[in-house]
Length: 561
Image (tube, rainbow, N blue to C red; front, side, top):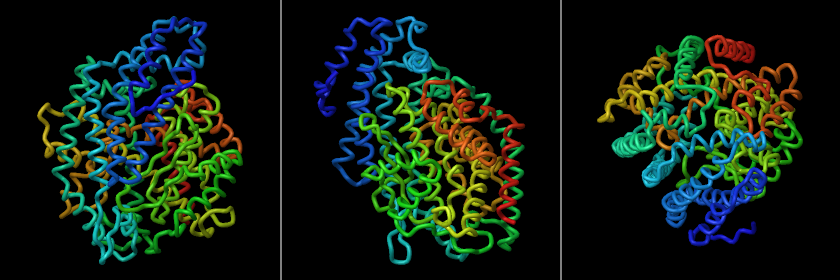
């Protein structure tokens, strides 16, 4: 159908939903009907994403904020109600009469339709409004440092300064700024928690965790499997992290590791400085992506025409993300680059998401089949970090001398190893919040549980005198506020990415080919089959986790020799 809509005016949108709802639907015309619905959703989602993009690019832009609030307070709620009618309509058909490529989509539709309650629409809207409030709070943060106003990302860069006194001062300044808003963070989250519990109750779920399991389409694993994963990390990964922390402490020559000692190079070398400007980051990554795969490089070239916002600046929302323009079929990358190696990793990571969007949108007609389950979306991004690693050296078109490239790769492997215990902390914290926490839970109880979990998974650092910073660590993980229970995906995906990397160590070209083939499947296969297509096994027990952790440990040792 030829769309003539203005998403700012629902009166121009509603007739298209009404027309689809009124149309007689059969197995014979279902594909064409879904195509028309997909086109409508693509326009609405692209409009909503552009509003989010503008708001995050400048959190001080009132017009951008108002437009974004319109999308979450009016446009999205109305479209959810209208879409529910269409989901029920397609689900009334015999699914066996529809193409195999639609079966996963229909399974997700079924789970989503069963959760839908119209009384939850305003509650979901209020949760999103509170998330925007959180984002605005984060975006407004800055630190005065030696007569200069620094973004929070720029302050973190100082955590790698070889001068311990500089690191300590930066650490104190950074966290003092967070603690200023401690009460505001607590208030936002406790309001969100109350709303999320009510949403789950309205949907007939015993807990918000049960609600999220269906909402996220987690068909291939259970909450109990997550706890198995936590156990595997505690027993197989934590001891290796503790070993390397002891090495780090010995090389630094300090009596105990303090929180400001973790990111610095243990040999007191200055932090890696791979680039001087966002433009340089952009151009060198072009060479790297070209080396990984020429076709992926060509896709990235397309993105360089207005679809990248890479530099850090005051008023810009923190973090990084990749989003898709569903009509234009081009992704957009947002980040806060300040010249660190972490920025390089972020760019490669978001590049993987971008390639996933382009590969899947090129081979799937319906927007619900773009990308994939969130766990596999993160395989796309994390695997790209590892597939690009051989090209970090100048001789291969990258950022570094051969020596610094080895160091960068070692830092990446070390970050992967220590990430899993942190992921387990975040995930276990949220399991407690949404299953065990009392109805009248307080911020002090949340802090106490976070501290206990942190000590279980993240030992080896002396927090004496900074207990408030440690116990409020959950404030600094935006997923807890904006994407509840969305974090275990990163851990599961890391296992998939490490298996892609293990394959690449034997045959880089074959591993890249399997990777691209899996991305092209989009969201048309179960999670375990997507892992298999990429040459990986979907498992998270002690044996699997231990084998991969030891592989990382082995290569980390080799790179540091």
